[in-house]
Image 1 (cartoon, protein in one colour):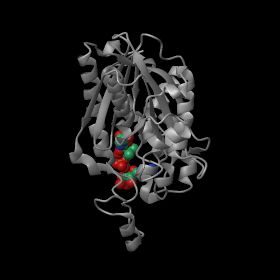
Image 2 (cartoon, rainbow, N blue to C red):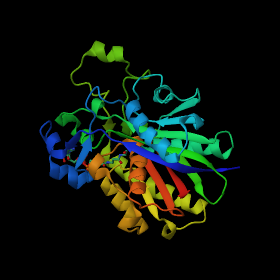
Image 3 (cartoon, rainbow, N blue to C red):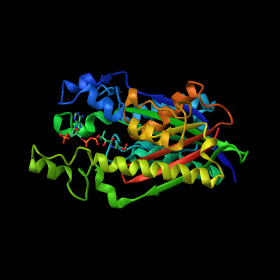
Amino acid sequence: MYNSKITGLGFYVPEQVVTNEDLSKKMDTSDAWIRERTGIESRRHVVPGEDTTTSMGVKAARIAIERAGIDKDEIDFIVFATLSPDYYFPGPGVLVQRDLGLRTVGALDVRNQCSGFVYAVSVADQYIKSGMYRNVLVIGSELHSKGLDMTTRGRGVSVIFGDGAGAAILSRETDPKKGILSTHLHSEGQHAEELAVTAPGMGKRWVTDILADADPEDTSFYPYMNGQFVFKNAVVRFSEVIREGLAANGLETADIDMLIPHQANLRISQFIQQKFGLSDEQVYNNIMRYGNTTAASIPIALTEAWEAGRIREGDLVVLAAFGSGFTWGSAIIRW
Ligand code: UT7
């Protein structure tokens, strides 16, 4: 039995910065409302045609591979988390295999939205722990901007989300006290439609139905979010799953060196920080600059924190996420 360890990290965000002021020219919103409710000041949007979910993931992956100090041919498996894939099928995992010119290794696509990266890390960790693989490429990438309702009708959702990608290489670690100590995953499908894009899908409305109806009031293909309900569940589940992870390892809140919460809303992160009595140094947030990038938010934040020297060898790093599904999870890492 082995452990897995994060040996390389990288992220990529599109150059185009979209400020709250920019959004207020397209819809009835304001910098004050967005900052006050979410903490977001700006986010990145791709220039259409310049980037895709896959291409952003590939750019982040190249950096992570280089920092891991491995050759791309040493990658044994790909796990790609996203809710905004390039195609309905196949998923972006195989596109990464192609675009990075990897061996014909397996490629798995994870569909767990905001918890996608934690789920993907958990999958990669199990493959490495079992001894099946040595190096797994894990990517979280999202291209939200193309699929948002950028009118006043969609403002409750559209101002929150941003585009970007993050990637990690997980590699075999022989010291059982180092690396990913444990992961904890949960779901509660009874709330599936509280944060969802329900069309196109084979369940309710396919593309042909949308086209046939040609209904200007149809919003089924835009994200729907029952914001306050999601918020209330998020703060409870974030807390539970962090505690669960710490308890499983005989650790306490005081042992946390760095908490990287999924960047859903700065108010949620601040609530968690306060509840656990953590200092500003113990929590990393970047939602102010990137908005909520769903599956990409944790790997982008983790990379930035690491680049800034805020994660050092031996530190206890906790990743935690909550989102659509509902799904939530945590990862407890000894760096
Ligand atoms: O990452 C996955 C998990 N996601 C989350 O955890 C998100 C959780 N939820 C949230 O972060 C918050 O619920 C939001 C930031 C989405 C919304 O904040 P809120 O305080 O819950 O606002 P609300 O939806 O209750 O809306 C309050 C008011 C409404 O107006 P009325 O009905 O009071 O007149 C909205 O129409 O604010 C209005 N509003 C806006 N006004 C200006 C909604 N969006 C906007 C906007 N600009 N962008």
